[in-house]
Image (cartoon, rainbow, N blue to C red; front, side):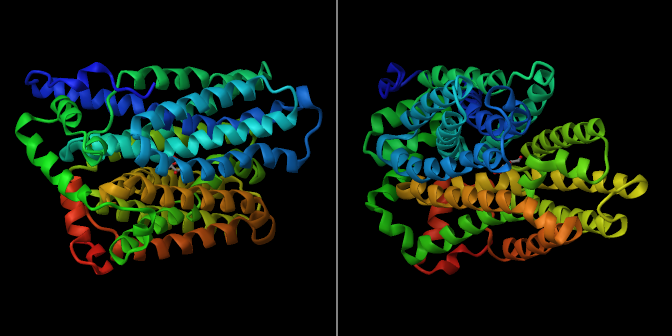
Length: 471
Ligand code: BGC
């Protein structure tokens, strides 16, 4: 399972630019199936929860919370170990192991004889989700040429949002059968496709170089780069990975600055509230006075906007850069959150007429702004800003922070709504979004159009963390 396909052992003949693009595109598309599973498995539970009682009898709120949130705890564990594993055994075996774990988890969940086994299986799926969430951008980022790296890594975010939307539609389509087992079990298809597709992919060239396996790296690079670029890239990555790095290096002053940027991007991506909308929008809208079908429809519209604006981001991210999208998107989130909060202030806890319409529009603008900014840029930037020798482990730290913050926001949201209501809750998110905006403006670097080696040299040239300042 860990051996590369034979092609990597010999250098293929010079390929046309089109063929090169096709290879890179397929490498990104296949690996992004991991993102699809991330989105599907996090999104599917809201619908499945409604029907668990058919097999397991009445469930308490605590039972439901366990089924939902153990995935997030599993994801923290998965993200924690995946970076170390990816640095040690390679990116490709890590993706293969992750897909096996996905298959085991979703089949186990679908066949669960009792609630306890379902909870355990949700944890197992979570471990796979956490691992996929960091290793997919890592792998794509190292395989992609600099000019289109932003778009290709953001395929992962497109896959996440498509997975969430598919989950909503599957839940809706299967709701009349009450078949929650099938809702979970359908994820076996992309998990198997990820495994099979990955068997035909090659190891990341940068990882191979960092292990001294330059012949294999050269063969892989010949499939994904113009031949004129290859030798310089090998020399650069070799130089950069000469310095043997250990986990302790995560805390040396140069890396620490960027580690903080990655962790804060991760935390801000969650504490600005996206998953309260992704996981709870129907509950929120229904509770705010909308009928069941209107709430479901608004939810699907929200999923469509999420996918649509991610496509817009993919088209723009290598042209206008990461910072303009991040700053513009975060501003849109802040404005829409304030409007949402005001709708609750004016309309009280039951929105009708104009306030209901304003709230729905604000929700859609909020999701669209996230999808064009903080959604894709977070995952992209953490795949770009770390030195090759500890890239996996540094990404792990940021990814664990992301899942940890997600867990905390998810379990506290309903309590927040109960105590400080819609108005207070969304004002709090708006405030945190403004803090995030100020931080991003001051600290997040632009990485557009530069190779990972150039970024590494620029950010880590001086020992001081001030090297992390935006250009
Ligand atoms: C976030 C997820 C979120 C998703 C929504 C991702 O970038 O990490 O937590 O559910 O975007 O589209």
